[in-house]
Amino acid sequence: MSKQHIEECVRTSLESYFQDLDGTEPDGMYDMMVRVVEKPLLEVVMRHAEQNQSRAAEWLGLNRNTLRKKLVEHKLIK
Image (tube, rainbow, N blue to C red; front, top):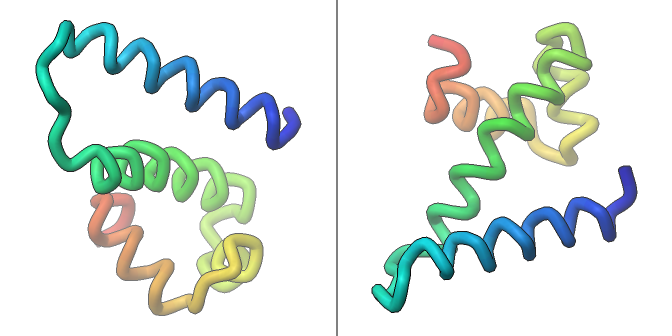
């Protein structure tokens, strides 16, 4: 899957979101998008990294402590 394909999926989803709003103005879209993209990103990367946080953090370009904080925030670990 190419970067362009992912970008187009996001574009399509956002257009659908605006259609669903049916004229209602959105609020807090940036934070909403970060949340809805971040959790599945973390889930998939952790699965492919076989739950190895150090490896996953390296792949994501994050500090391991930052990754751990995000995993807790998304209730992916305790």
